[in-house]
Length: 353
Image (cartoon, rainbow, N blue to C red; front, side, top):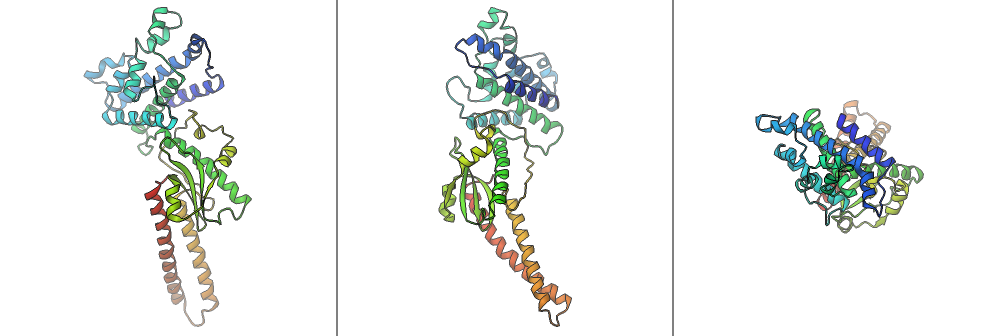
């Protein structure tokens, strides 16, 4: 999609030629000028596209086709879309720990700030026209990142509304958590293949955090099963009586600290709620616990059936199958109860990733 490609290009350009801090404020503004004016255009066109495909430019909204006022476009959106954009904006501030003086607390006030003077028009002509420069909205580097985040959210909403309703937009914190999880999965994969007993000892391993809400990414390893969780590991430790190991430094070294998901960077990927679980022997959350559970059941059935075959005497195939089925049911019940107890405990006390 055009908006996706354009935003990606802006991020790549900024990564290659970032805005450098300078004691001369005008020099920073000159560096940022191209990025900010382009971001204004992308935000405006994204909002207009979302308007067009949702509530349309009817008689009451016809004049919005010509406006450059981002707040006016935002106010004309569907109520649910406005709420989503505001929730995602506030989530980004929390995830980046970016609140404070000069930073607007909600998306409406942020867009009001961008519309100061003549908004995008002011920025467009600020370099060569002193009158426009005097009225230019004040921008920090964080404002540019916030504007990019707004564009990303509009882009994902537009995709959800027009192309695929299964691709539910996600807030920044969820996207970053998904990126961190990819690193954890690769880290666990290498741990298991370098140390065959890595998953043999029950424990909790801290992976990242805490965030602004004091939540932590951590692993719970119990009975050979491995699952990712996000919440308070101390609550889980007190319930399961597991020791805690701090592996955060190991994770940072493994990720080479270059992944924005492990810091305050802003190179977000656009992920959706469609999760793909990578199964390499017990990593990936509840679904992988279930996969591990099914695998163990199958192995138990094979062993039991082999025992019956070795001592079948006069029993026929029907009796053999019936005995195997009954044993399988008892194994499934016992292991299902054990897994359910662990999962429910973790869901109650920490929240599933």
